Length: 139
Image (cartoon, rainbow, N blue to C red):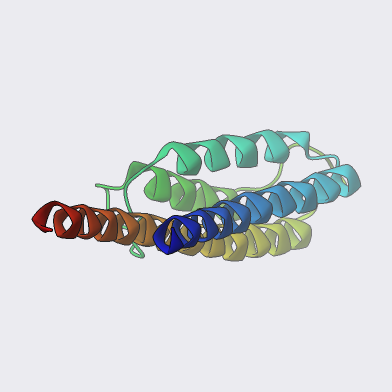
């Protein structure tokens, strides 16, 4: 019973952390888009978040790791966005674009780190469940 309660608590903590972070992230980007009129950015961020959510592999900390498509895709998109002039709205100038890209980079890196931690904990939980079953079967 203690193991079940611990597993439920771990599951709730993992779900809460990632889901809440993602919701706050979207909310922040939406407010930025309201100010700048760059609605394409919101759609791009949602697309990247969806790719990260559906990627079950750990995402490397290295930009050149092509074996991790979701993380690489996000980083490539951010690099491209930082190097291009914004064409969506004349009110969005280069300085605003630079600040936006830096903020998005930091937030996506935190999100990737959170996602990696979640995946590691899920694997550890599965390993511990297997050990528990083995102990029960040996008794």
